[in-house]
Amino acid sequence: MVSESRSERIADRIQRDLTLLFLQEISDPRLEGVNVTSVDVDRELAYADIYVTAAHGSERKDEIMRALQRAAGFIRSQLVMSISHLRSFPQIRFHWDPTPERVERLDQIFAELEEQKGLDDQDE
Image (cartoon, rainbow, N blue to C red; front, side):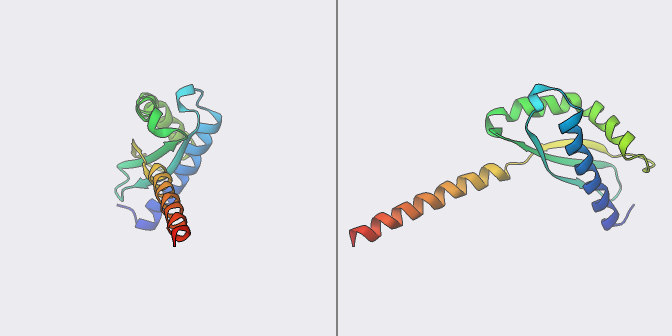
C-alpha cells in the first residue's frame, strides 16, 4: 500500500501522460476530442479509474466508451512504458464524467431564471 500523496502523484502523472497519448499517439477518430477530466488511483495501485468527457459527449458517449474499452490494452501498455518506475501498473477502468453536461444544463437554468426575473421586473 502506498501513501495517499503518492497515489495522487501517480494519478496526476497518468492523467498528464494519457492526455499526451490522446493528442499524439491514438489515431482512432472515435476518440478525437476526448478529454481526461480526472484520474483516481487506489492506494494498493490495483486500479486507475479514468474519467473522460468529450465535446458533444452525450451524443457520442457510447461510441467513445466502446472505443476506450477496445483500446484499453494499448493505452495501458503505453502508460506502462512512460511510467516505468512502478513495479506493477494498475489496471485501467474508464468512466464517463457527466460533470460538463451538468454544468451546461445549470447554466441554461440560470439563464432562464435571469430572463424570467428580467420579465418580472418589466411587469412591475
